[in-house]
Amino acid sequence: MCDSSGTCSIDIDQQKPFCSGQGCSLASAVAAVARTNTSASATTRIITIHGRCTGDPVIIKGLSNVVITGDPPSDTTHNGCSGDKGPVPGTLTSTVARKAPPFAIPSGSNGEVIKVVSSTRVTIKYLNIRDGRFVPTHVDDGLDYKASTGGRVFCNCITNNEEGVDVDGGTCNQVEQNLVLANEDGIRASAGAKWIQYRNNTSMNNDLPQTETASDPAGRHDGLILSVSTTANNFEGNVAINDAAGLSDEGLKFFSANGNCATGNSVTNFGGTVNSNPSSDNTCACEIFNSSNNKVFGNTFSGNIDKNGAPCDICRLVSGTGNCGDNIPGAPACTVTTCPALFRSESSSAPCTVVPIP
Image 1 (cartoon, rainbow, N blue to C red):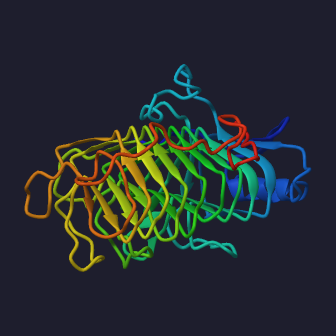
Image 2 (spheres, helix red, strand yellow):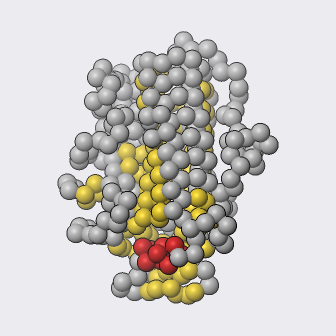
């Protein structure tokens, strides 16, 4: 599904092509842009990928003002994407795939297909991102956005990886209208990520067999995950769905995550397979473990089950205080009807002054 064909060809700004054919790679294009874009004042550079580019893991480290894009789909009437909740499978014609081992892992990478580290205003859009999962020896993320600010992940189709998308620390990033399909785990906020906006994404069938010990104590086979030390993030209007219940944990999971907001999300057909943490873990549409002051309201849960197969269309509170919302049995109503604004385009008092590149 998240794939395309055609000779790999890459442009940089008006240089067409920067490279083409055998030996052409996103890594070489990033290296070229790195010569000019290490400061916040750098002019925006645009790397455009055509066809199917297969190669070593790619790292974007310490860069500013960079757009990595595929060719837009023919239909962009859905807020710039081919679907309201992510691209329709088959509509993206540009692919970045990790090749089968052996491959060269650059410094700072763990083998992710694409990793963005310590960067500002890096946008990744209109790409199929795939094949970070080579069983049993090389199982890594599709897109890891680590310790970065002001980035945007938009209208990508991401498949066959450990984690589909992981925002690993950092602040003020946007993850919007992506389809994360058939990975071991779905869409995650982790490692202290703060003020990240996850909006109108689809996390679907992310229940591939776990191949190694999970790097995150929250485990695997979840749809939307807020993990350790994440705070003040918004999950709005996302879809977490499986074809059938029984092979997954939760659709929405809070694990040592405080002060986040989740509303307008739909969770369908999750549960039946527990993770090792917490030791008494069960499954449900949603679970809150060791997490406080989260707002969970106005979400739609259907077809979800506990580990014994009984219906469980609630947000189960295992531990934590100060959580609110109508999806949590016994919790008070939240005093707000929308999640707090994160970006100045939404409110002049919002915390994020950086403006991601569309």
